[in-house]
Image 1 (tube, rainbow, N blue to C red):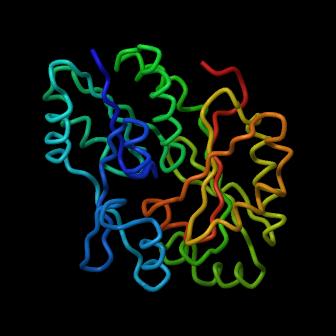
Image 2: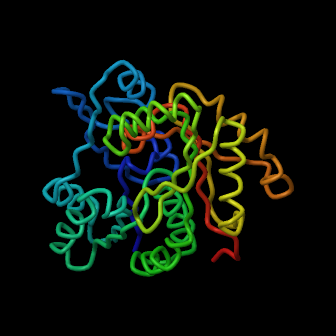
Length: 286
């Protein structure tokens, strides 16, 4: 019996990449004012950041409803297939709960995994699930593996601006103003399904060093498992600088550094210019 893997666009897997991987990505809805867009379908990452930079009003992403899940699962869960849905963290969105509720109607043919992550962290679990599917594991076995390893996924991001944390009400305008004057670059992470502040540095160079120090404190990167880097905004120059400045992290381990663009789900809060890394913490892969 085949296993169909489904996730949502919070994973920052584009529709084009999804077709290459043989994964279905459900687009979430991004709302700017009264205008609604399907993430990655009617709104590209580039278009999203163009709109984000131009507007003073923060967009928001609406969660996928149980009814939408039921329709999607009913098409995927045919008699010859099992469905595995990998959701963004239940602490960041109600979509995971909606998926679990919808899955109950399918008599065990649909399995839902809470990634306890988002963006490229969620994406790593999808890539790991594909690896396990290729080994012939069924949906429940894959789900158990993902659940046992999701706590090893590390996502760290260096932000270029405090503006969008201010707009989202996560820091005060006074703190944001002082931070911009001092060129403060915060490093955030996803821990236990939630976004947390790890530390702050003054200037991009110190920010890059701080990001690398946190990678090392996590035990380093397990290069036998999926890993990736990402950037937010209209271009990736800050990410390329980070890669050059921290080549020692990757030298001798890999000649290939996968890179993707951060989309609307996280991009709304971090703004343009963010640099992110996602990896399984050091150890032997399974």
